[in-house]
Image 1 (spheres, helix red, strand yellow):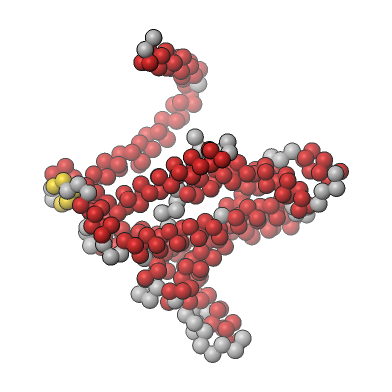
Image 2 (cartoon, rainbow, N blue to C red; image 1 turned 90 degrees about the vertical axis):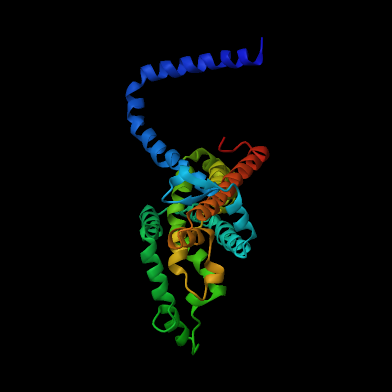
Length: 316
């Protein structure tokens, strides 16, 4: 029997099960239709515009009528003097953001899980969740208010400690990256800990009871029970984080940007906005953004493959 015949034979039971499942649960499939349509309209139909990256797009000619230039826009970006700086800034904010920020919600969730006073536990959870709901514009406004050297809290604190002229961190190339990463961690740490708390709530209490009987301390329970139980969740979220390495938050970076910190704050996202919408270089900006997307996709594949080979946890 040929390979083609075997594949067809294997598909028949699958198609039969699918048909039987649709017949049995047709109400659920009807409810799925709006979601499927939304995904197609907003995720797949826009992919038609990807071809702009390979054309010299002219609005008057449309996408199909514009001249095909192949990889010319990609070559221009790779050979441009800003390529290295943009890539370095984007990777720095993303990679160091993950290194510093990824463990924070895990540690917070482990700490909250050890609290026995339920009222204090709920108050702490609420307090740590709240910053997540602050809009980016308000968040950057708070940063400006706090760190303005003349009128901000940072300036007043510096002068109280004897510093005559507190530095302007918002205009400092050295301070921009730590300030961006630290405020990101503070804002999202509590919210990101929810999924780890949910995973910890599923841990069998008998494991804790057995550990206590054996004389295990709280720290030993965390190391030998809590962490192994949430490890699959940690791996999955780490794989998903790898897909966001090239997608630095545009709005926050753009709002914190100024002429003095521009050498370290100009990322691929802000660059695409400036050349695409401000300078109307649609094809070039599409090529840069497509490069960004492809790198993110490759990173997800690589991290997922490594995770699958080292352990049994992966996205697919």
